[in-house]
Length: 147
Image (cartoon, rainbow, N blue to C red; front, top):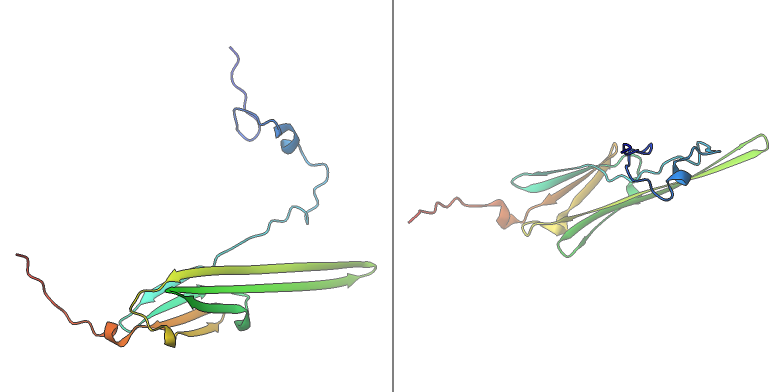
């Protein structure tokens, strides 16, 4: 009995197309193999007695590229940026397009005042302050006895 052979990807059973896709490329220019990244900004959410603080790490955007709106009880934050660069050297022209976007949505609790949300964009960080309703700020302590 001969031992099972694995292909260079470590698979025991080779794919029908593995000979084609696993072969070394004849021509692989670096610009063709460049990957495109889709990233979702990291977010920090902090609750205090009077509000919720939301911070997004979204460097490279401009203030006007952000869209913040509320649908039902969802806070939706998105941004979109397009950039075009053109460079001429000698007889060659190079034109590059860049597109970056994201969208995040958060379910808002019932105790927030959506009429007074404040947003600021400083040093690549989008900061939102979402105040709580007045009645939510004043919780009285109540002890419940176990029967």
